[in-house]
Amino acid sequence: MRAHLGDQLVIESPATSAARRDGEIVGLHHEDGTPPYDVRWSDTDEVTLVFPGPDAHIHHVEHGPPGTASRPSHPEVGQEGTASMTAKPARSLNPGDIGRRVAVERRRLGLSREEAARRAQMSQDYLAYLEEQPADPTLPTLIRLADTLGTTVTALRGAGIDLPPGQGHALLHPELRDLEPEECRTLLSTHGVGRIAVRTSDGRPAVVPVNYEVVEDTIAFRTAAGSVPAAAVGTEVAFEVDHVDDAMSQGWSVLAVGTAQVVTERDAVNRLAQRAHTTPWAGSDREMWVSIRPSSLTGRRITSADR
Image (cartoon, rainbow, N blue to C red):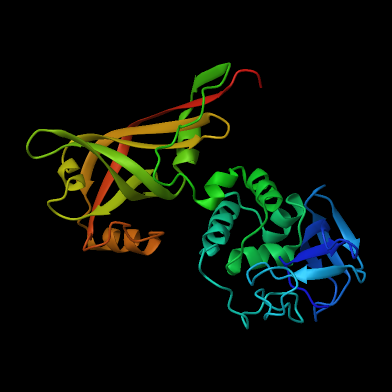
């Protein structure tokens, strides 16, 4: 018997062939995938050390029904305890998106893999596998990861991507409080996606999202000449960022107001380009840097008054 991280251990009754228990293999003790295994049982969500008997078999979850002899879909665990890429899992469901979302949320919180795995009660090797390889983790695994990362199972799966945030119900006892400028700066972070409110050349108001950077208390973004965001140049504009936690019905918003200016000094443009965390998601030629030095910075947060 050989298993891989993420495989299912199924124990059946020899008399009826009915599954009595199954669980996800979350830890290996031998490099060749032989027993024993750390198994997280689906009925109790507890992890135990298991030495499988004759009534147990491995279900390679991406390759047909239990007991099939197809090639394992999960990567081998090498001598250093890391997942190699000798086996290429099927991509039909594209579950690798889950791993990318897990990695992004983990880095956002500043957690190492070791710490995140400890909090989620899983093997560090298995977390590495989830982040680096296409995988289809069980619901209990996703619940623990979502709880550890301060997000939701729905968000990790990417469901609701075409819906606006804030679909949940309001808190029973909400509390709306103003944020201090320092907290606003912290929430702005170093970069992200925000919305800029401008008046276009035909006099109509518009609000558009832009990728932005924060450098020395100045907000900067790239756009193209003649675009809607470019209409901000030389005017006082509002720039807003926010975050909504649908699961907890909480969120915050930060509003910066200031005059937008084109960055023309070559050294300043080069510094912004070097510090940029990403190119504009909208693509195309967007090399015109616009900066906003806030004259006011305000924010609000909705939390539960019961806390």
